[in-house]
Image (cartoon, rainbow, N blue to C red; front, side, top):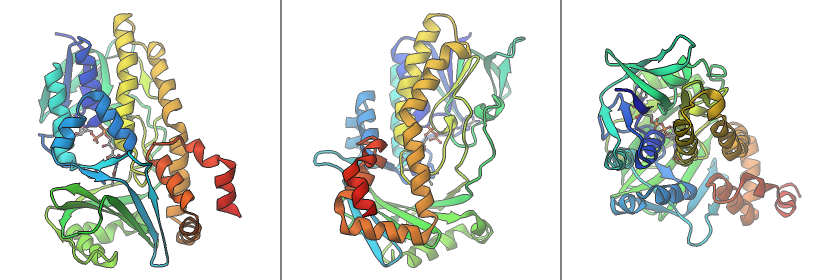
Length: 387
Ligand SMILES: Cc1cc2nc3c(=O)[nH]c(=O)nc-3n(C[C@H](O)[C@H](O)[C@H](O)COP(=O)(O)OP(=O)(O)OC[C@H]3O[C@@H](n4cnc5c(N)ncnc54)[C@H](O)[C@@H]3O)c2cc1C
């Protein structure tokens, strides 16, 4: 049997794309190499625009009922000297939720929509016809044909690489260590980012008395970490002043993150979520981009399947919509990263933001996708930053 759509990866991008296509009546197969529930290295904060995307998908009530923690804003600290708080507008919230729970709920939602989900199956290659057009995947010793293959297989996507669409190897060399901890009371709906030197740590409640702690380490220190990542992580809890924190699970490691894609479409294939290009996790926009990308992808794929044309040309509307939706956010990520990786610059900015609270709110709202990044260019705000 030839599937209408074969989705590689059951993270937020894959589950949401598959669910939307199946709800429209297409025959959809989703493959993931992992067994669910599975953990995923992530700060586990869904920004406010991501929360709205969960609502549009029809899963927000289920996610809230699972015990997700509300997130009203962020406190950013540069060393011990300067810190500021940025808040989302009244009535607008993000959520902290463990990925093992969120991703399992999204996958269940896809199953309920009619998607056939097969886990524990790794996709190793793409199948192509005589014209080099993608016509399915090779997975677990089987050849599985499909009218379109959706690469939603995250960072280091095999679909992206087999399509030859990886723009270049990663330049930004960083490593992240993630685990859950108990004993961090007093966050009260406000996430924290603490930068020291060229490293930083993010902390946010994820419900059930747990907080996610994600330590970002410059690539130059990767060797130091690799010998004993749990020991390194526990030492960082103390270095960043998180003394009351007690780790409750294993430390996950990932990096680098910087995998740009040249294009998000090819003949018979399309990329969504991290597989369509990723830069840096600091601004916490990835889950929103995965869910919003799924909305854009499902619209274009549905039209292409109906027209019986899944060529790259027919899928280009998705590529353009993807660029329009995320290009400004990517520029903002690069600016934020430039500050975070230069301690003196970050201290200067944090000092400014402390004295001018409107600046803190504006940057947190832009990175939370509540306001467009261009809102930061309002003359009044720019004047507050530079004068
Ligand atoms: C350190 C760190 C912190 C982050 N913090 C945040 C945050 O707080 N908020 C936020 O919004 N974003 C955050 N992000 C980004 C976010 O995690 C991603 O953007 C998001 O998970 C992307 O979803 P996805 O569905 O594209 O990919 P993923 O969630 O990575 O899912 C990909 C799936 O594909 C499967 N897969 C991979 N290869 C194959 C294969 N060959 N065959 C079959 N299956 C395969 C994997 O098992 C996985 O289930 C962070 C990222 C990092 C690295």
